[in-house]
Image (cartoon, rainbow, N blue to C red; front, side, top):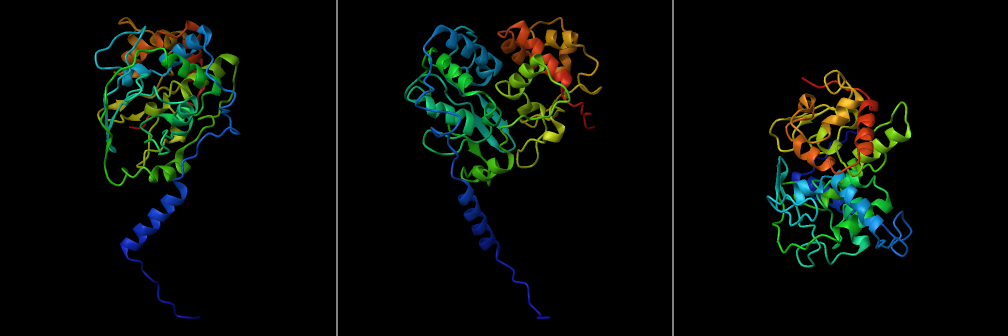
Length: 315
């Protein structure tokens, strides 16, 4: 047997190899005309029904909570100038301007630009968005719903507000590395397998896992920010690092003691819901958004939350 001496690569060479690897997998995966989104046929329907449905999806996603201009409480024509800072262990991410302003917002975007941002996490310029933007959830939305949301956003007032760029800590600041992150954690299929389903549960699953992106906060993450799907909706540390996000599975440490009716009632604004504390302090803002949904949709969300696997909270 030959006596071979192991060769140790200097750290700089290892880093260089990792950069090359990241470059190989960093090419953004855009929606093409042969993909689920067909830019030649999926034009935004300019009709009242489409805008109304888009408005419902807008509130299901709680878009105004992050993107509305500070202290703007207009639920009819919200001003989406952005600027609210999400402070995390990875850096500070200001919510972007998503108003129809053509200079600082998304007014100059095309339908396909919007679809690629929502469902691939790719900017019009071809760069990766940081996953502070929950496109990993929006990827589960249907093409038609994405276009309805686009139709609604175009009806809102443009806001001339330039938002600062994210301040991301090393080594996460390299957007090319997000391509590798996506290969590891970007999962557009269902987040969880359910033992039993119904039209109501299916609707709730779509709202929670897709536009509602509830799992982005209520599911714990690993050191690289990837969701731990084995503990789907089981709660964990807040993305800001301050406090905990509660367990909303049907385990006894979550929503197990609440009935379907009680959970649905907790999704409406008000001060009389004692059980609303189970959802966490920030739930009041979520309830204000969900108030714009139909009672049928809130009941569907409750049905889904009772149907997901029960996962105990960690001490």
